[in-house]
Image (cartoon, rainbow, N blue to C red; front, side, top):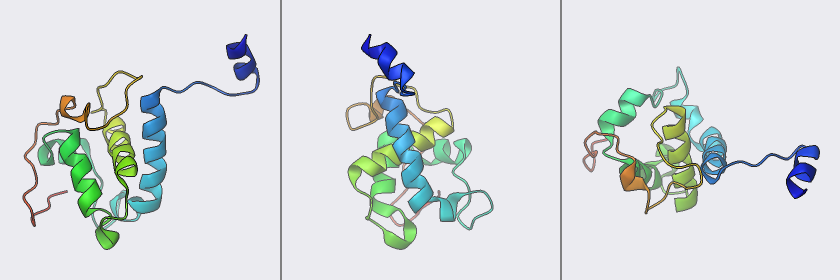
Length: 125
């Protein structure tokens, strides 16, 4: 009955992973898109770029947390950095987790990307 009531009110249930990626899309729009959207100076974060630059989701999240946004490094908190990472990977069809999971320290190593870790001081993405 509660599910029917929620549906009748226009509410829909989203998985934990979809909620996280949805939040990440908003964080990306505010903090990242000005440099990384199509046609911008830093260029799009494509599948090829992500896979060739990062070993797994954890290394991508750590890069986002420490180095982004480029002009305001370190302003993202870990939760927002995980959300942006989830959204980027989902957008590029690289996020392979159960929908009831969230991307985080315990699940990130299972999301393999295959690239090399960026060297400190040398940033490819």
